[in-house]
Amino acid sequence: MLKKLIRQLLIAQTLSALTVSLCLLIDSIIIGQFLGENAIAAYGLANPVLLVIGAVATVFSVGVQVVCSRSLGRGSQEETNAGFSSAVALVLMVSIPFLLLVLIFRSPLATLLGAKEELLFAETRDYMTGFIIGAPATMGALVLVPFLQMAGQNGLLIAAVGTMTVTDIILDLLDVLVFKGGMFGMGLASSLSYYAALIVGGIYFFSKKSTFKFSFRLITGRTIRELIRRGIPALYGMASTIVMVYAMNHILLGTGGSTAVGAFSLLTTIGNSCNCITTGVGNVALTLSGVFYTEEDRTGLKTLLRQLTGYSVILGALISVLIVVLAPQAVSLFLSDESETARMAVQGLRVFALGMIPCCLNAMIKNAYQGTDRERYTKIISVLQNALLPILAALLLTIPFKTSGAWYYFFCGELLTLLLICLFVRLRTGRLPWKELNILMLPESFSVTPEDMIETDIRTLEDVAAAVDEARFFCLEHGQDLRFTNRIALCVEEMASNVVQHGFTADRRAHHLSVRLMNKDDRWTLRFRDDCGAFDPVHYVPRDQADALGIRLVLGLADEIHYTYALNLNNLMITLSARTVAAEELPEPM
Image (tube, rainbow, N blue to C red; front, side, top):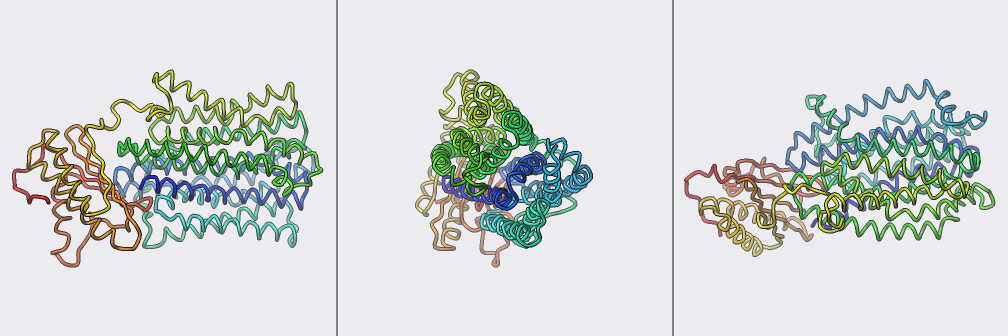
């Protein structure tokens, strides 16, 4: 079930990232074909401002993923709704003032970014003006992405970004063919396409089916601060990328002029589309590592890292080969093959391809550190990967090789970062990084030993009976009396049987139920996770009082019980303490 979930999330995240990057790709293609090389250079110079919008939105989005994945892992729906409400408020409080500031200071900004020639200055300023109008929608759309995914609305997520892509194409063509709006029109087209995506995806949150509920009461300073704090590591990554783009633009201006800057703009635009795999891997690692870490699910973390490592190597290698083979065709979509800018871009793309596999692995590790409370490591990796090492490589390699040496910035930055991570883990733990969970450097106190936990996959009622016997033996083996043992066995029997008899038969699809029993500090935790339709046993009101007697009995036995429906999975956590067992007799399970 976990492998299927990881695969589904990776597909949805990758397609979402690909479709978003296609908007920028489409802008570059139309700019190059209709507005010329100078406009491409202006687009590249404006990129740092566009990245600032993305950086702020990413901070909020990552904060949402960390905070809400942990509240879901704890089974607290109210905490999750507080995160949702506070995130919406945060977007409005930040995006609107940012929009106004850029509009007021757009001319000085264009000069600061390096647009000194008159035409280059005008086109850089105009593109920023059109794009910044969409800042609230850009931030809002990116923040809603993790909520749609946590709600299991992957289809709606893809529909929203698909709408954005189609809208952007239509408006871009209208700009260059009908309205002749130039670079301002191109920026405005992107803004309007983000508003279209926000409308399509946002409709879900106003429906009764929405997993998340907005409430002004739940907007608190504490939650807002927590969202920002948890998202700050992502800011290091985005800020480092902004610094790197700014530095590369100036390095290339010194070695190859505006031609080299235009080639770099094409390289980063095409490279961002190829990096959809990296984004997908990183987002899945962040979301699921947060859930599994909160649940102290060592098996889940192992499965997550193993699966994502395999996908990173296979998909990274595939993308690398495609980039090398199709680089000339990709660049020809933007510019004529005979131009110097196109020649440089092809050369840069082929070198860029070498860094795809280490980039995917770095994204997985970096985001897994953040999901497991290793945010300091996430920040360090972000600075090394996105700024320090690539800029250093470009500066050193341009000395002997001029512009050609600068194209190695991405490959050197990613490979050296991965090697440094592995070396650090080896020195810190004395173990091989890729064995077990060594790469995460988790404390010894994390989770429990294999002897204090059992996990069972259930598909039939016969499996339920076997799970009940296994739970009973596990409790007795750990020194529990028969009364408490019967409580645990009864919980397994009632809840698992209910899922198999009702959830599994609700449709014709094959379903899975995972049951985990863990003993830690005299607290016994049962976790039931299934991929059936949403069903909340905690608040279930049966039509007939004779129904759900077993559910009500389990609710009465539990010290704590939490239910959430997230990622298209029912998650039920039941906690019992051996010290609080009452003396009354209980019915014998199977």
